[in-house]
Image 1 (cartoon, rainbow, N blue to C red):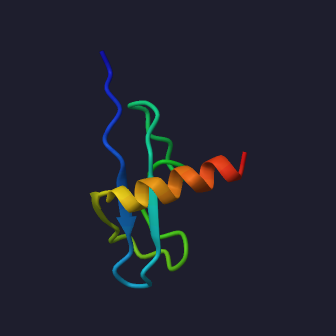
Image 2: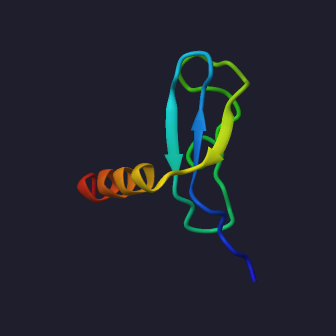
Length: 67
């Protein structure tokens, strides 16, 4: 049975862009749930790390308010 990955944060070391991803399934959509290049500076060296509780809460709150 597919299991969604744990929430993670992508960070650009060049311009400090940051995006927290809360996957709903194991299918990650490029440009929505996953990025190869930084959307702001287009550098291909994004760092991935596990999202903190604060980042998860902030992202859920933003998603709720944008519905």
